[in-house]
Length: 430
Image (cartoon, rainbow, N blue to C red):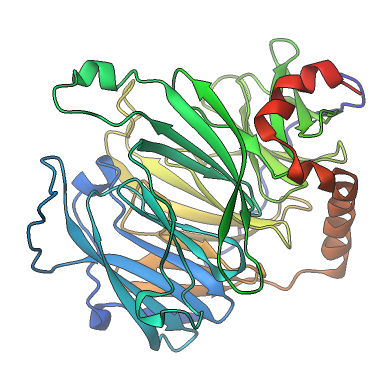
């Protein structure tokens, strides 16, 4: 592959000794009770979520017991429950604002957006939240973004949360065969996310595509990453800029197909294998065609969840330890032991912190990395633990800025029609 070098595995990075939290906020006085059953994790239930609004405020949400009245438009498949949302001040845990939502299922319902805003899902409708804003503080600034009858299949974001991939399927009607519903075609819509000075979130449509099934891809607001098989153990990465140009990147030596995830607009890491699926590899790459680091790891990317600090390049990865391998097509492991969250520095792959998160849950939400990359929040039973991370060195900051510098020539691609640009990328190799 032109301009490509392959990354080879090195020894695993030194494991940091167990760290003590800088702050612990007891959650029992707030009415929070951690789940203890495995039914929730196995059913993809979202038990609770924590997200940084900024470095001094957290948004905590969790299911709470409440008397629920039956609605006229109630559906037979509904699993109605109430979720309490609290804006907490750090580090004292003081409640500044709160709201309550009636949700109709147990799937993931909350995602972070730029500038301390959030995306809330209620059924198939999407709302923006502005928890610290002055508009409608009693409801955390809840504002309808998208109302739809189509069934929401999946939601994916760019690392900077400025591009959204929304996948939907036709709504299920009375009398539909469940077997046919599972095979309905998927519509993929890309939306640019804008937050102007008035704090009102806007979606800007950037393309639509049709697919036979739901899919996932690694992308930023400027392009999409393609993994290319070169031979049995060598893989390449191509970044297709939405303006139509293709950027060949460094390669990866792996015996299985790598899974790549962006942690900033210019940096990504990938999971691979060495000598079979048993030995896992992690490698760090960027759009400068650098293979920065690769090492072996015992962490299994089961129920993988990643939180990044795009402004610093740091990222946190949650993996799940199991007592047995996942059954084919089951979607979950037979028995969950625990979950660990590891924070890495993207410059050299240094492990900065490794801590437990419990109880385990399959969706995102039981940990959060602060926007400045200096704090990690983790749910640990009935405690919210806050860990301090080491300062970012001048060398790491300078290297991160160098990586971001390549983006200046791609900025115009943030206005392109995403689907059109992807479809023509192979014909505009430059």
